[in-house]
Amino acid sequence: MNRRQFLQATTAVLVLCAGQAYADPLADAKAVVDKYATPVTKWDGPTTGPKAQAGKTIVVLAGDLKNGGILGVSNGVEEAAKAIGWEVKVLDGAGSIGGRTAAFGQAIALQPAGIIIDGFDAVEQAPALEQAKAAKIPLVAWHAGPTIGPDDKNGLFANVSTDAMEVSKAAADWAFVDAKGKPGVIIFTDSTYAIAIAKADRMKQEIERLGGKVLEYVDTPIAETSQRMPQLTTSLLQKYGDSWTHSLAINDLYFDFMGPSLASAGKAGTDAPINVAAGDGSQSAYERIRAGQFQKVTVAEPLNLQGWQLVDELNRAFAGEKWSGYLSPLHVVTADNIQSDGGPKNTFDPDNGYRDEYKKIWGK
Image (cartoon, rainbow, N blue to C red; front, side, top):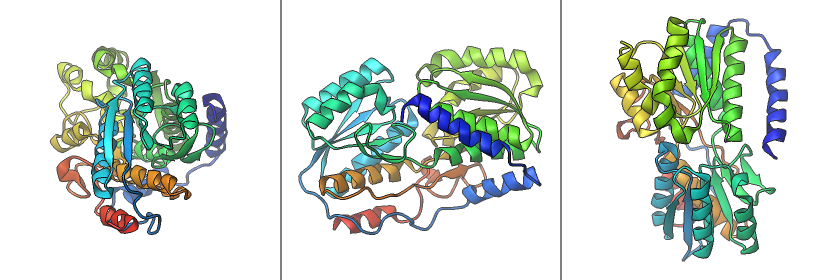
């Protein structure tokens, strides 16, 4: 599915959703937040699968290791690979198309048993995907497009993710509840990525359906947040003043560089605008939430668990079996629950025994 087709499909879904009215918007939004803020203690992933396929060397193609989500997944892959008995090489695309193209070429030249695409749209590297297919190198991915699971068009055995639309809905619902039903929201996204557009559109639709107001929809490259966000934050403060109550971003990285501008404007760390991220639960986001410094929420993905899932999916590909079908959980992280599910280590790492479950499947 290309970006245009995906966005058309997403628009159709959002139009259908927009027709639904809430009897009690605050209560409904709070129920969603409460559902995803509870500890994750039960394993709901696969319990059967192939034993470890021995002697494999794999490559992780990281879109940009400065991105906390991408780094967290890469770390999880390395941990899981050690458990299953594989060798791993991590290549960094360094946040640019050219860098990712070069890394993909290097990966294919290494002739690995499998490749993991970590955090960038697979369609961006279509020629390299064809080369990998011709070389019969299995591909699995994290956040490589809107399709979760097998993506035959792009040659992906499985694309691993949480439900991105639920992540976006949970973030918007939290902002609505926090604003007591009267948020003035600015949304930050990056049109380079189809999934980022879909997440931002879902947040906008949810805020407006609940009865809140979206002040502006800002499209700015996530790879350039360090250069753009300080001045952009200042300009938006001047434009909207106190009517800007909440920020909703498709990734924590947007908030890495907002703090100094907010502080310069006389804002304390817990003052409006309140920053809420729809992914991915980076270390810096956890630190800001814990310290009460310019971010109150991240809707986190279990990055380390997803690294283990990617290794498991590759193992299934090597064994000639189907993908696991597992959709990993999301978690609304706030100061109230940050001490659970891996929070002391600044990550959403569910206390559901996933490491032991995967080891049992692999016979380790």
